[in-house]
Length: 374
Image (cartoon, rainbow, N blue to C red):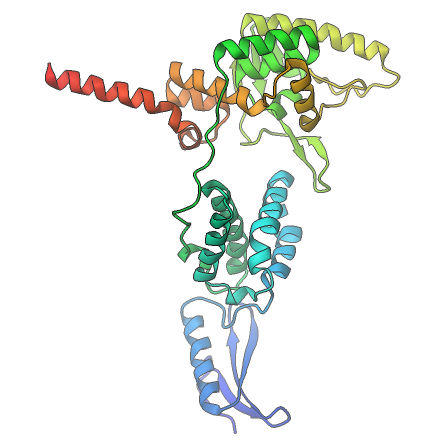
């Protein structure tokens, strides 16, 4: 027997071939009639009330039965790639694969709760993962479930109620080399491998990202004025291959003044590129400042080995950039330093390099004390 209700309130009826009571209601969000089964009529009425309450709250009548792993695969393949760069998609995929799916992947997406998520983060913290790594995993999961809510597959995003662990290890602070050490590294690299030395010099003197230096074109550089318009970087396409992107990491251009030493090195580099072109059996004319032997871009992962061989030290591009950030923040207003480093927001500069400002904070407090004490 069917329990009749007004339009939009749904109905409860008995399905004899399955010996089940069924609660059915039209879901205006999905445009479909949603059904849920129960053993008793009372349970079916309870399910109907739950679905009706969800619809009244603006949520879908029922959540998707997909597992988190299946939804994540669909999300990465057909959803997030339309709004994010291939590099960002690869980062999301890596974080979900390494830190989320091994713990929550086989659960139905609608059964993932905030306590389950917090338990996962606690397990990662127990493994010694840093707070920033866990936060990145949390953000990836949040983005994944946010789109599920947006598509009416979930009523709410449980990551919004989940807290990050307080016992996670702090992120490792960068340990930049001293200015004298950077000078020695540049000198050694220029003597050992001049083209790599010029690349080292450009990164050290500008604080740019190595992918931006490898993607630099001569049309971006004005040697007469001594400026570099940073407008692109190396990135990955949908197949995971390295390509030259159309924009920088933050999708913002910036102009960096070049020191006279860098301008002179770039003049030598232009001569070197012309010689490479004459010697090459084939040449891809991409106008790159630092091409390989056939005119294509250098892979950043390969330049790390070149950097170590040319300098004779186990130094990284990140350390050179952090040294530049240290000096820039100490000698320029924070908005200027943030723009030169290519950060989209000043808050990013503070989050990444805030520890470098501790000495300035102490000096400011000392000045305040002196002003009050007279």
